[in-house]
Image 1 (cartoon, rainbow, N blue to C red):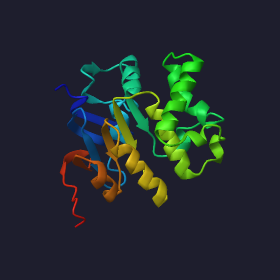
Image 2: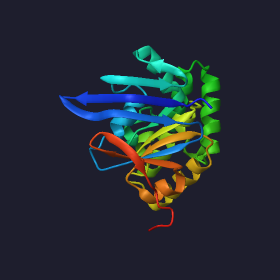
Image 3: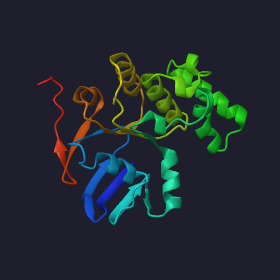
Length: 223
């Protein structure tokens, strides 16, 4: 089975500092990979590197069966790998929810009518249809998080990259997010400090320390 992502000895530096140090990892179809580690360990940088938002100084990134080097290479990756940012306000910029969710499909080349139809179907599938006409900046933090996920899912990605997805969520929206993600037949890479959230979703975990990765255990017994 062809892997979705393959990183081989990838190093990322910033301002003379090594953020990721010879990282190698593979993401298989259907796998839900948790990234754990302290603040500043490089979790967000690793997610960004997967889709070319950070440039690797050394090593090789293979995504969806092809080696990716140029910005043009990574534009395709960013269509097939949906990135849910840590701050929902970085994801949402249109006046209304339906416009935000339709924006991605429009950029994929769908007609305006088809893009709106896909946006409506995506919101409906997530139980968010009532939010469609709402003014985006007036949503609660939890609503913004779920609508941000809808904008990603409307692009029909093959992989989800989730950066601290439960950050600042109340318990109701956190539970709804877990329910939605658990029901998706998609590979995921999840960077999070929320251990119970990861225990509910992840199939494998990696610990990032000093820019290096090592296998980690997620204790599903709560110990």
